[in-house]
Amino acid sequence: MLSLHSENSLDKVYQYLILSLAFFFPLSVAIGNLIIAIIVILWLVSGNYKEKFLKISNNRLALLSIAFFVVHLVGLLWTDDLSWGFVILQKMWDFLLLFPILLTITRKQNVPQFINSFLLSMFVTIITSLMVWLELIDPIMKASVENPSVTMSTISYNVYLAITSYILLHRLLFENPENYLKFFYILFTSIVIFDLFITGGRAGQALFIFLLGLIIFQFFKYKILKSSIVFIILSSLIFGLAYEYSTTFNKRTNETIDNFDYRELKNTSLGQRYTYFFNSIELIKLNPILGVGTGDFPNEYSVIHSKNSPAITQTVNPHNMYLLVAVQLGFLGLASMLAIFLYQLKCAIKSQDFARNFGLALPLGFLLIMVSDSYLLGHFTTILYVFFSSMVYQLQYR
Image (tube, rainbow, N blue to C red; front, side, top):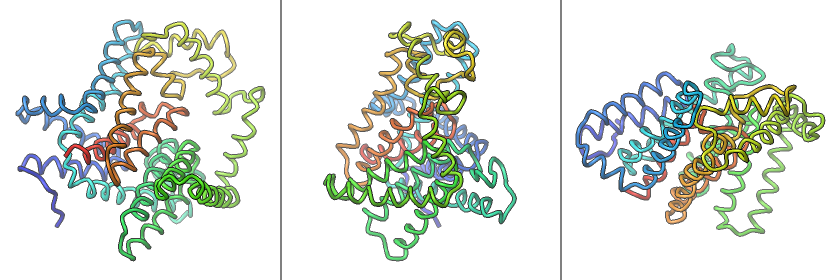
């Protein structure tokens, strides 16, 4: 029977709830949110408030997370569209409650079991995805034969696959597993990569290549020549096979290449992002310090959009986390967000083993993909980021 280390009965309940959350949050929004609600409510009503306050006040990452939420809250003061402001604020709740709470209740000795629970969940998801793709079962939930992402959009799903591949490769390369586990990790990683390239999330594919390069450099202790040669060979092999045998990847790659001609972009996904970028930069120039307010991006953007690009599809967010925060909250908001990532990098550099390696991979990976979408607004990717942040940085503090 599974045994989770804890100090008392309440603490043990927390550990089992986190274990359940690790399994269910990639599979079900409803069940994941229910478990989160139980954790938060139990923490809020269970007393020992002085001790809880001290734990959070002594954890700089928790304070930075709360500060990021508070900046959004304060941004309501100069927001005209309060209704949309509250929509954005609701999406930021994880930074006020879940992130700080998980940071203070997670036990570092249980982290491997939490990660195992996540990997089991991903294994179930990936096998289901492949069964849909092979037409062994009818498409379910969000999946289709052409794009077999079952529980979430491919934009989020491929990020999950990229993070999963890094964890598996880290166990294979750094943790000296038994031979039967080596075989399992190699097989599991191969399936993850295969699934990554038959689905259409280009940001997740870019994240995978970045994390592949990073873990190769980490394995060879950042020896540039050897790491570069291995990375070029492996990435070329993976991309070559994917381009040759994955219809989806072949099509999306050709579309990306074709769309680099801005004059021909029109309403392609890449073209829209170019347009959102230039229009958002204009808004930032008009309100560089405090931004337009937490809820005013749609209204303010529509004015610029109508003037500069009426033929392009309208948007309520620029599909770039940096631009969204900078437009809404100016450089004050952008600094509050970047402070979280910079502190994570600082913690990772001072750590060892998995806490060091994955502690670098997680923030660097999100800093990369947030160029292409607002990943801290999406439910699945925000939970992924918060969950693993609370896991890996616990390894330093406890």
